[in-house]
Image (cartoon, rainbow, N blue to C red; front, side, top):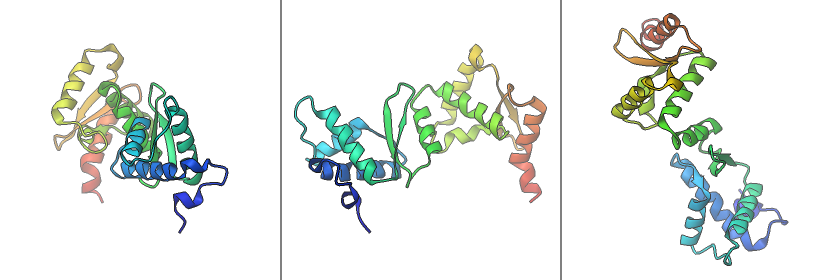
Length: 200
């Protein structure tokens, strides 16, 4: 099976072939660990491998050429931007676009992250989101952090639609009153947490 370097098109600058191969592997490695790769990450790792020796001022342009060559050769490489327009890179071999977007959201305001996830679940599926879901990957928040965020959100106008419901199993679910009626949200949470297991 041809490797990244073997599949780099002839039009790509030959001086960047080794760097493009390494950049692709850096992105894949980070994706395999559940992380996005920033351009700073890629530059640092290329430098550590003694593969990147751009002339002063050439760094950004050279890195753009390296990444373009890597992406031209490897269809699994993707780019996603954070809220400030800063690019992040990942491999579709190891993570989906949805997961990558969750990682980008995680880098921002945790209150906004919680609200967006809850509203998205309430609107699209529709279903309430388990409080414990924020403790799992990719969120990785502690129960204390989650409750602190919810306490802060309770006092802010922007998050007044975020509500809670507790099931008969004493588990808390979050939902948006903009998208779900409280009684319906409670019924859905009970089904997700208890009913579906009692009625296979």
